[in-house]
View 1 (cartoon, rainbow, N blue to C red):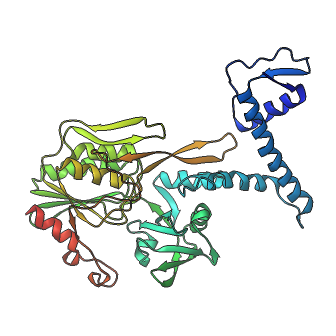
View 2 (view 1 turned 120 degrees about the horizontal axis):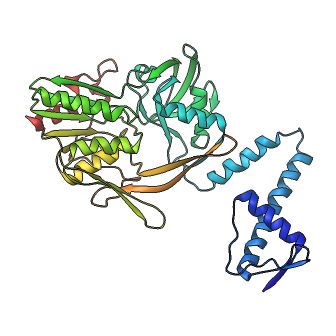
View 3 (view 1 turned 135 degrees about the vertical axis):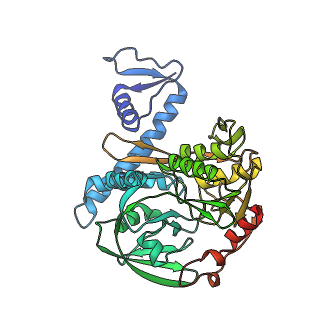
Length: 400
């Protein structure tokens, strides 16, 4: 048993309370609050010693900045930087500490209604802000911003993958105001001046194409998407379509439970996907009997990410339909968002998901059954017409 002076015990308890750590070793005993010494285990002493060193160093650095930096510093901003640095130290671009404004922006985007330019972004492995996909019919979409563009500056301020939340906040703003975006496309730098708009996501669009082939476009998975998809699917069944094309191209993902509902309507009884955490604990998502009997094809591309890949991977493994397009984005991890008492929040990757057959999706993507490329030459004045859409034409061919 190792003894500590009562003053050191108080320091240890303060550190534990500040960091949310609860110390529970086998036989820690506090004999009396009035005594000068207490008994702890060797393991607890090592934890105490490590925390004393770490937090002592942190306190010294804070004092150094406050005493010697050439201008007064905002202590709240200083500590926010510490918290953000802690998450940056993980090395995962999808995990982050969010201040109150960043958290509010994230929640607004998830609600399906916001003011901005209409682009979904994610940090890439090279440190850029990567455009996963522009949202249909938004200023970014109409201006010609494309999937795989790299946003390097907003209104003259440069941003990287590490400052992606600040970049998103800069692109948001009041409807009708202008914002200038610089993007890197290949080796070329392009500049777009866009007028922000109020964006209400209509995530499901449908029509019946020539030859009685149904077409359902899903642009993202939001709260109302599953209900809208079921209505569109029911309409296709009532109209007696001979086949169905489900377009998930440039769909950046969204709510996992929503994509599970949609997959359930397409797949026979069985596994849709499963998640696994760091301890190997798995959680399975399954489909019930009663899938649609309409033959279908799913279209994906490099802008199809996250929840889109859950659907595509499940279709490919379960084989009720075929996949056409190009390999998907490769984001096969799930973040948990926790709101803190002060209004800030944490966003932490807590698990990854797999295809029904156990195939890894993260950083690999889903490879289509039929790989069909689309080039810039296929576009007419920036628009991909149906007759020039090679992926759509391949899907139609498979359903005839």
